[in-house]
Image 1: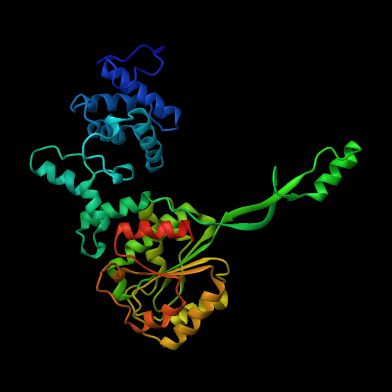
Image 2: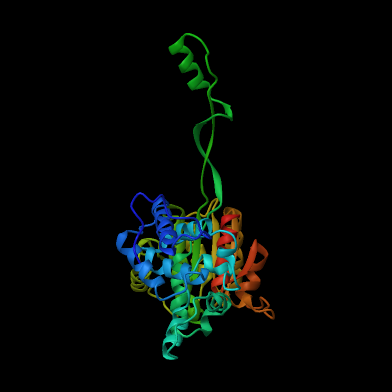
Length: 373
């Protein structure tokens, strides 16, 4: 294969009779214009990969480019947009392999390993990933759990916004008398009516992660979800572990690398796999901190070892302060689940929503709730 001349304006459009290398080089240039770090070396790797694949199959082109041209998780959304804009129409959606989850995640590591053991190349489809998204993380193998954790690291959690007390200049809004008078004094007349409006800011989230023994199968995954929340909105997210003690984890979760962040908070938490005294810890939190205007998220199975009446009282206090109170229970993902534990019965009247927390799909649904609370 030979590359087109430098003055080629991006290669021929897909579907023309131009050599495939011209089309693929044009795609690489589109990625660079969008901010993807697809340098010359990565472009050469992309073309070499296509020599062993079928450039007429959209799935082959998609995964070859995604694995060679993207430098990190931040490039993936840009890559997906550019791919579907450049290879639009039938080429981008041909065949059943183009599932919805292909826009977010790469193929499963477990699939690749299984294909290599059989002596054949693993198919680059998202079907295995789609299955993992809905499986209970407590029932996954180590390899499958590592894949789910990798997907959580790519999760970009949106955040509902609230009106701030600060103002900004605007074309529409309330009259800004001070600026209007100041301009009139400078110019000798009222030439323009200045206006202003309230700014907005992300609504705060306070997340409590239960690290007791009954929650141990889910604790690590919940902390990785907490890391994704902190990475998305560092200034508007606070995370605490709850068990027998209330422990602040936000600082440790600000590390960019999820593994480093988890190691940091593991050393911080003194009560791994202990009991749960959520009522006492909520009382301590409300005495020292505030959840006013925030979205309070409690991730626990509700096995309260303390006094349920104390938990009921503190949940009522939390509900009066917080904008929304969400309870994430891993067992809620099962159809026959009923909130019969003492902690759940005490908390239920004060919840805005009781949601599942057993799978990657459940965490994605939770992020949607946080984005539209």
